[in-house]
Image 1 (cartoon, rainbow, N blue to C red):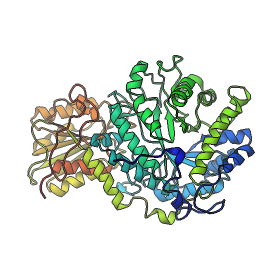
Image 2 (image 1 turned 45 degrees about the vertical axis):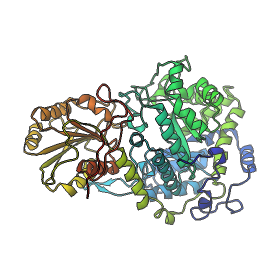
Image 3 (image 1 turned 120 degrees about the horizontal axis):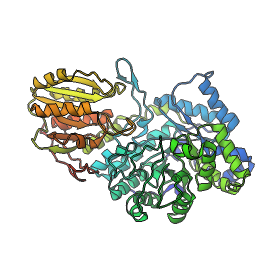
Image 4 (image 1 turned 30 degrees about the vertical axis):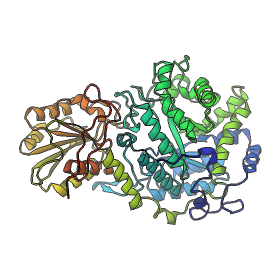
Amino acid sequence: MVPKSKGFPALALVLLAASCTTMGTNTGGSGQTGTTSPRWTDSLLSSMTLREKAAQIVWPSVLGDYASGDSPQWRRLTQYIQQEKVGGFTISVGSPIEVAAKLNALQSMSKVPLLFGADLEAGAGFRARGGYFVPNAIDLGGAIVFPPEMAVGATRDTTLAYEQGRLTALEGRALGIHIAYAPVLDVNNNPDNPVINTRSYGEDPQLAARMGVAFIHGLQDHGMIATGKHFPGHGDTGVNSHLALPVVTVSRSRLDTVELVPFRAAVNGGVGAIMSFHGSMPALDSSGVPGTLSPKVLTGLLRGEMGFRGIIISDAMDMRAVLDQFGAAEAVKRAIAAGIDVLIQPLDVSQTIDAVVAGVTEGRYREARLDSSVRRVLETKRKLGLAQSKLVDLSALRFLVGDSSNVQIARQVAEKSITLVKDSLRQVPLGVPTARVLSITVARRADLPAGNAFNAELRTGLPNLRTEFVSTEDATLNYPRLIAAADSSDVTIVSSYGGQSWDALTASAPQAFTDFVQTLVQRGRRPIVVAFGNPYLLQQLPWVSAYLVAWGGFPVSQTAAARALLGSSAISGHLPISIPPYASRGRGEERAARAP
């Protein structure tokens, strides 16, 4: 059973004692373990000017990379904190030590503690990894990376979802991050969705609700605030909201039975924050404005009807879905009037703060409306103990982040997620170890880890393995050479890393790739296709005899897929989506592990 979370309002939080003692440096207050008095929030709020209040809810983005003290980047960050007095930041990629050191330095510059949020959809390692050293593609390590959410959905194991939340919180708080912009609660019921895809738990709203709530409890029970996104639902879209305005033209009854189900469960489960959807839902607001700018969606539905009392965070305010129709300043004013509490990734920090202030002076909303958002932000800082201890212990980080016992849990998720959608010729697991196996990796040239862990694991059981890499950008690829290599092999494995969310504007595979795989089939090579990217790839390759879905290209999933093919681990995953018209939700052929 997954423990029931007490929710954000009761966040005395398991990690609070640790953050105020072993993990933190005392920066004020009594120095005792625990939160400061609520009077801290009242006093601070009453002492702020209107512009300082506005700055508390504007959170720019910052990379977790190294920046010298005289660099333009560092001077800009110094300005954001000391002159603009922003209330927090959204943290992007960097190595664990550099992220933590940078956040400590930013905290030290700020009189009021800062809140740090990050996209931790696949664990703390989704943002805090050292990357790969070129030209050798050396993995520089970092925090734990889990498979994408849809992989967790394929396990149908809420205990694993809870564990992912728990470990994300432990590692994230050790890095100095307080809010995870996760889980994705969108129901991905559109195979053509170019931006959600495997970031969702699947197309079943009840499954998404169960898995999402388990993750939320794991996260919030261990010291980090969860953010359900993208309210009221980004799953049934074929448009990338980074580039244009998606419109979901379904009825209110459909929204109630599909899109809103996971969000209602999350609110009832005590989720601390909700992120808005930069998309229009005419059934909720006939004006055509995106949900981020709609009072009917945020104040009427989320606050009023659903009773949400936590923080409402906008999706990135530099996305075209909110900029194209109104422009940056007007979008900011409309967002605050609609009910947004925090504006992340603004186009221009100073102008965004000015726009929030202008909304008050122009009578678009009262200062009391702004005060309610600022109070939520300050109360969050107080309840997290940041008024007493806002720094993290860099020397302790090495023994908290990337711990080997925690890595095992990510491996367990990956292995249980592997889904054998199709195996009509019973090719999986692979046959004799002496077989000549050709492993073809199809990925972008910049995808340095693609195929590395997969082929390394395959080689442990297949000494005669031959590998080839195919760049999706190479229009002059010598496919005849690859076909000849397949003709001289006993087994051909084709691994696709393309078309996953964020990788491309479309989920479709290039025609040259599908033609190549079809040629292999026609020549009797019986290729085994492994989808490390878009799981809907089967729609373009319906004639393959074996189709394995690994859900993501992270090394942990690559190793799990190779172990499944070798028979080293069991195959037990079941599709949390349908792949129309070739596979229904729940499909998955199971295989027992071979005896050692």
